[in-house]
Structures are given as structure tokens and as C-alpha cells.
Image (cartoon, rainbow, N blue to C red; front, side, top):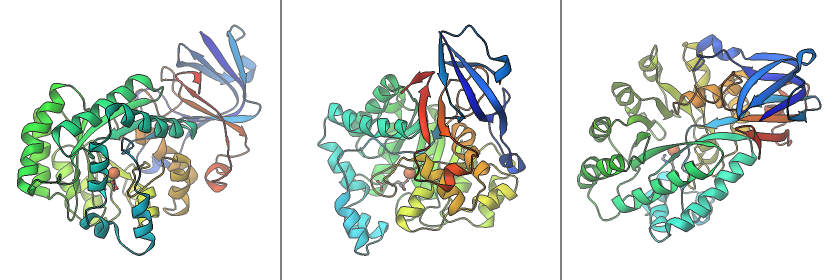
Length: 408
Ligand code: NIG
Ligand code: FE
């Protein structure tokens, strides 16, 4: 089946095959083509070029009517499989409690863990798919989803089975991360729980092939560098590469331990010193920042510009979760990248597309306009510049979304 999008004012995000991420000055550029067509064949990008060369043999034509075509957003860090809501804690937060104080009172992640325990797999899938569908409607085409609200072996497996079912049934590309070490589960001592993660959970998860990556919340009040070292060792024995939570609440040493274990990404980084930037130089670990949690929790925004000036790449993701970032809107993430982190619209665009795809190991498949990649695309309303999207961040610019070439 051949589908052709015609009358595109500008294709944005063109990359040659084999380019898997952008770093340093490369972040300042994106490949574009004006007055263009784009041909999709069997769900993949088959060709693109000037309108004068548009093929005449497509079965279907979509008229972009002067809109732009971009790759769908890639969201490399989410916690969207959860049960119920934490709107009560939202009120506590408004009344002045911090994230740590809410957690210490037994709220936070443990609250979500209680809700998840009493919710069936079927119902958990239903609630999670509502979030997935909302994210897709806002232009996202690839999503990493973490476990971490189970905190007991059976409940962690329940979450990961839900993620597997989402993988099988939703049109977006999904990657699964095991985050048993998100908080110490109720009823366990700290050391007992770390052992449970290493000796029981990781082998059980690996046996069912339920996870692509392993994650640890390496931060003040949660898991130490030493815990993280042991958990990542256990993950490595089962072929799980780390993507870790580091430096959200404090400078935790999480970046350095992630680097030691060859992490694919180190995420959050709200609290970063020059030592963390230095530790990441020249590596294939992607620094990933989550402006949604900075916005919601009132934390500093990551030092994205400093990373780029040091020659590194940066990815941006939503962190969609019920406690620190209750939104999966990647357009808003893009806008915050510009407005609060002072990235240029193109830098932030690269951060929410190709670099976020890299941070979940799928940038050979999505994240840019490249021949052979999945046709995960956004067609905008008529638009004279890319800058308009993060600038008028509430205007509904998205006209049409295609995932594997199918409108959705
Ligand atoms: O990435 N920081 C740890 N985990 C999540 C929050 C999870 C929650 O509060 O439910 C985060 O911010
Ligand atoms: Fe997170």
C-alpha cells in the first residue's frame, strides 16, 4: 500500500540513515525540505522530495495543504501504568507539603503501590491505555514505560505484563523498563528489599522476557549508590541495560554509577554540578531531562544548555506519572525546553525526537524522517515556521497523526 502526503510546506527532522543521535553543535540543526511530498509504503517512509517529482502511482493521497511534516514525538521516560489517581496529594502539595514530605507520610509511590495492588490486570490495562491514547492524540509515537508501582514480585510482574499487552496492542512503539527499585515496598526492610529486587524480581522478570531495561531511583531517601551498583550488576547478568533516575532530589552519585554500568540514559538531572557533565563527556549515555517534574514540583530545570555546550546531546521526556509530572504532552515538554531551559526550538525539537528515541534504543527505527524508518509522523496545520509550535504552545497545531503510516 502506497500513501503519499502532498503539498507539504516543509518537512522537518530529515536525517540520513545511520545517524542515531545528535550531540553538541549538531543539536542546532535539523534537515528540512520545502514544498515537498512524502511517500509511505507498507508503513515505512519510502521516499520524499520536491512536489515537482511527486510519484503518480500512490493508492492514496493526503493533502497537507501547506502544513509541515515532522517525526512523531518520542517519550523515553514515563510511568503511565498506574491505578487511580493521587489528586488528594495534589491538594497536600498546594497546601505546602514537598514531594519528600508526602512520600514520608506514606503517600507518593507507596500510595500508588497500594492502589495498584488492589486493581486487576485488566482494569490496569484499561486505565493505562486511556493515557497511551491521550499521548498518541498529542503527537507521541514511541513510549518507554516503567514498572515500579508494584514493589512486590507479583505486582511488578503484573505491571510488566500490562506493559507487554500495551506493546502488542497500541500503534505506538513501546519499550519496557523494570523499576522494582522505585521505593522500598511496604513491609520490607531496606536491605531485604534490595535483595528481593536482585535475587527474586530481576530473575523472574528476565525469565518471562518482560523488560528491555533496568532502572533504579538513585536519590536521597530512596536507593543509595551502593544499592544501585548491586541492582545494576544483577540486571547486567540478565542482559538488562540501565536507564536510571539520578539527581532529581539531590546530587546523588547516580550519574557516575550509571556511567560505570554503561547506562543508555541517565534521567532527571535537575541537580547537576560540573562533575556530572564531565563524567558524561565522550560516552554513549544520553543525558535526559524531564522539565514536567521541574514544572510540577518547582525544582530547578536541568542545565541542558551546559550539556550541549560541553559537546553532549540532550533528550527531553515527559516523566508522565501521578506524583511528579501528571502530563504526557510532549508539545508542552518541547515548549518548556525552550521557555524554561532556553533551548532553541530546533535544539528542543531534536531532544524530543531523535535523542529521545536514542535514549530508548530505537533511533534506528523512529525519531526522524529517514528512508526505511516507521512512518510515525505529525502533519501540522498550515504553519510558516517551526518556532510557532513551542511559542504558541497551547494552539492545536497538530492536524493529523500517522503511526506506521496509519492515521490515528
Ligand atoms: O520520575 N522520581 C521517581 N519517580 C517518579 C515519580 C513517581 C511518583 O511520584 O509516582 C519521577 O519523578
Ligand atoms: Fe521518572
